[in-house]
Amino acid sequence: MHWIPLIDEKQLDDIIAASFQKPIAIYKHSTRCSVSVMVKRGLEMDWNLDTIPAYYLDLLSYRPISNRIAQLFGIEHESPQLILVKDGKAVYHASHESISVDDLASAVA
Image (cartoon, rainbow, N blue to C red; front, side, top):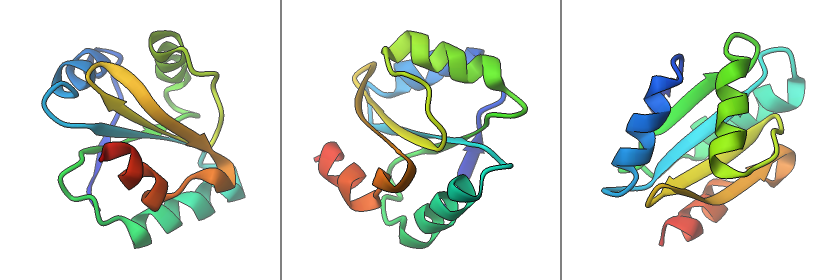
């Protein structure tokens, strides 16, 4: 799995535009949260969706980007949180132990 760092709000415009070509995942991660660390590790071990770009957002360093994601997609902030953007909209989101690569794959189909 290859994480793309999400470090600039301008990247969100690129993500939305690119999502019309293929779905894009955004993982919101807290480096101080053991659940977030565990979920991230599970994603990395189970990830089999190599055609889906996966963005990684460090919430502690870039909280304004997380706030913008909530505003753009109408999804309340949670951490950890996995969001799938397709055709400019969030078509799937899950948080905490509900995050699953299999569920994400089903949302892609």
